[in-house]
Structure formats: C-alpha cells, structure tokens
Length: 254
Image 1 (cartoon, rainbow, N blue to C red):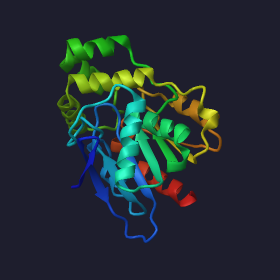
Image 2 (cartoon, rainbow, N blue to C red):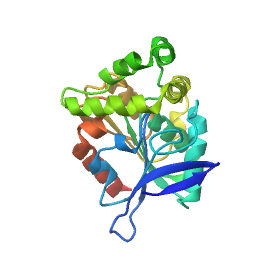
Image 3 (tube, one colour):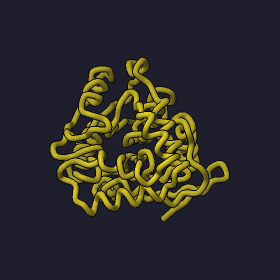
C-alpha cells in the first residue's frame, strides 16, 4: 500500500488500478473520524476507474495531525493531488469528505471532473453536546455517534468495527473533525457549482437526512439524486454494491 509525503506528513492511500486505458481518476475522501476502510470493497475497487482512497492526515494509517476546518483539509487534498500529478479527478466524498468535495468544486473547479456526495449537506451542524462530550466523555459519545450512523440493514459486526475504528482515531482528531463540520456552510454558494454531481443518501440516514440531499439536488444545477433503501449514514458500507453501481453509471455519463 502506497504513501506520499505532504507538508512533512506521511499520508497513506489505498490504490486500485483499472484495466481500462483511459480510466478516470476517482478520489475517495472519508468523513469525520474515518479512514479508507469506511469505503466498501465494491466502491474501493471500481473496475472502470483508477481509485485512490486516501486516509486524511491524522487518520487511519496516515501520520500527521487532523485539521479543524474543511478548508485546511481541502489544502491537504490539493497537495495530495499535486504530488500524484492528478490534474483532475472525480471526488467522491462522504459526510465531512463531501464538504471537502463541495468546497473543492466551488473554489477549485478546474481540478474536479465530477462530484459524488454521499451522506452530505450544504451545511453540517453538530450538536453542542456532541462537541462537548467528545472531550469530556469520549467513549460514551462515540458510542452515541455510531448508534446513529447505521440503518436497519447493518450487521452488528459492521457496527462493532465502526465503533472500534472511530475510537482509534482519538478524541482530539475526532473533536476537530466535528468542529470542521460544524463550521461548514455553503448554502449560499451552491449555485456557483458547475461540476457534474451525483448525490447519494441512505433513506434511513438520521445524521444527514434525505431532506439535506433534496436541498442539494434543488440547488446544484443538473445534479442527480440516488436514494438507497434500508441504509443509514454509512450507506457506502451498508450497501456498497448499490453505491458502486450508482457511481459507475455516473462515470459513464462524464
């Protein structure tokens, strides 16, 4: 598995190469407290694309420190793309990763071939009790967060793995991620987005409910919406085949 050096930080990414000669580059950006493992196998190994599933700084196998703003994570992604000489990519972001993708699409449109926004919203406000609890009672607060992340079709093993992965990130990184989400707001800037956009949401998502996806669809010109039954906020793990199929159809239209 490869690493790259970015701003004195060692950043990990999982890579899947397509057999197609002119396959698009797809960059998977996970959400708060996540890693490349938050992407289901079917999504990480799309046969129609060269797929880069990055661990943001301070997450997963990457070194360095987390960030406390979406803008700072955007700079990390731009550096990542520059090091790997990815002039343009289809950015697939989940939750906080979708905020990173939206910001890239608005502020740096030339590097975006398309956007896939999963479990997304134009703003991602966080309850003050969650922000406080992450510093005062980390374990219990993470359990609360994870309990709201999965739909009725998720297995208990999937939930246990999700809990372990989020706990492993640590309280400061996870707290800062949620601070970044809380300050994110592009509600007044969506009309300037011109990248082809696919929006995917689990019908049982209580973290970023379907009404958030509907708002994005109504305010991003030409965007497409895919709602997936029986899945929650972690739809790309819970229904990875359906999410992969939706992304493949989207790539075929670019």
